[in-house]
Amino acid sequence: MEIRWVASADEIPAELWAHCFPAPLEGRWWYRTLEHSALERQFRFAYAILERDGEALGIAPTFLMDVPIDLVAPPTIAHLLRLAGGVLPRLRYQRTLFVGSPCSDEGTVGLLPGVALAEVAPFLQTALKRRAREFRAPMIVWKDFSQADDTTLSSLQSTLALFRVVSYPGTHLALPVGGFDAYLQTLTSPCRYRLRKKLRRSRALGELQTTVLQNPNAAVREEIFALFWQTYQKGKTKFEQLTPQFFQQIAAEEVAHFVLLRHSETNQLVAFMLCLQIGSRVINKFIGLDYRFDGEWYLYFRLWEQAVAWALRQGATEFQSGQTGYWAKLDLGNELVPLYNHCYHQNPLLHRLFAYVAKGISWVTLDTDLACRAKGGE
Image (cartoon, rainbow, N blue to C red; front, side, top):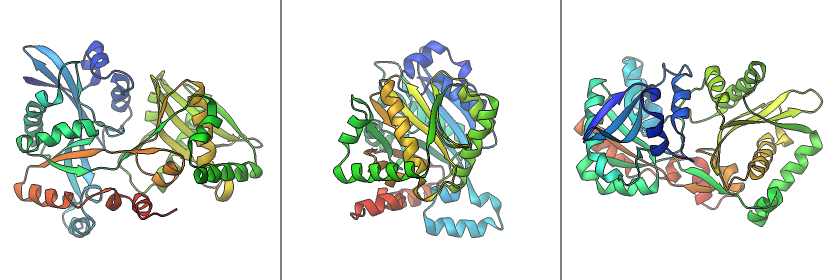
């Protein structure tokens, strides 16, 4: 087994991408979009091509990131490192080599049919260690891998010298046949009552016009980014900071659809959702809301109604809504999808410390919404 590194998704044959990242996975178009979105101050992308006897077997997308310590360290340790960071700024960040994508729900090592992750993982981990040392990245993280891959990586834990950390779960909604009314019937009676009540109160405040656009022009993209930025500023967990260039790049892709809500009287854009339609799956990738329309406008729920109704018209069978914001998503019928990080630290002492801390991390400790739900909150 050999590992060859390339710096761009376009250096890898389109046929290999298609076989290793078939729908509904985000393929070459997604990584190409990220590369051309002016994100180089945040991420450095590279791709490991896995080969045997000169024949390509798979692709492992990776990225380097100087991660704010707040995102990776327990609160007590993070507080101490923030204080120390006032004297030594490098302590406020930890350079990390990730396997996966900064903006995808699930990490994936794309392999040809018949090739198992268990076969390639030891060789890939060795190559990752070498590359991490080359770029002075003390931490390696296989980011947000599914339960199936988690089982494989856990079985190789001693071989790969990785420790396991529970990650923020993804969210998934199975879409029924029969339109939005059929979807409503899949909700529990209390959830269905709450959603209808919110939609009714919101409509009493004013009508919103819905359009679903592909490849919006520059003026519309400017409106979209302004709403995205409002929502980004409100968010508690900030991993990636998107740019106007990202929306320009993704808008040109055939899979990208923008669900837009405008105020009927002013034509002002008040909400958007970027949806990626990949095969039978629709991914709710990013949203933006105008927070001046607060109170009983319930913009998120108006947006959700229109996005799900559109996805059903497209014949989609599943709707994926990403991590965080769990309270509303669970009320809307989403199920939680377990995801796991598998990590390695070059420093043996810190590796053991982080591995010990990781054992105490769960959904309850990661997110207040999930903690409240676990306690039976409504």
